[in-house]
Image 1 (cartoon, rainbow, N blue to C red):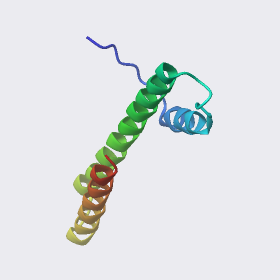
Image 2 (cartoon, rainbow, N blue to C red):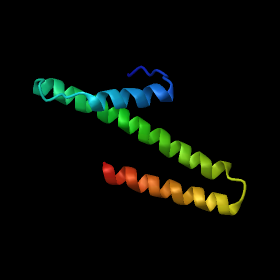
Image 3 (cartoon, rainbow, N blue to C red):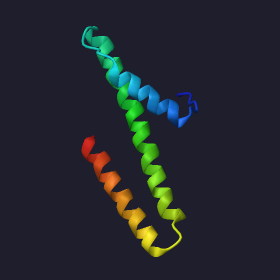
Length: 85
């Protein structure tokens, strides 16, 4: 069973940025696969958090127009995330 930790959102974004800047092609295939898996998992977590925030904006909306706009943004983000998968 995995153990989970909480990290600040800013650290998650910083970790993704740092990993994306690393040139991994001088490393062996095993390292490249581990790198890809780690970066993919962090990006998936970022996407999940962004989607959750977009959904909470629907719930927190004060009126129907704001709720509709938030819903449209949520659905667009969800399509973008699913299209990137």
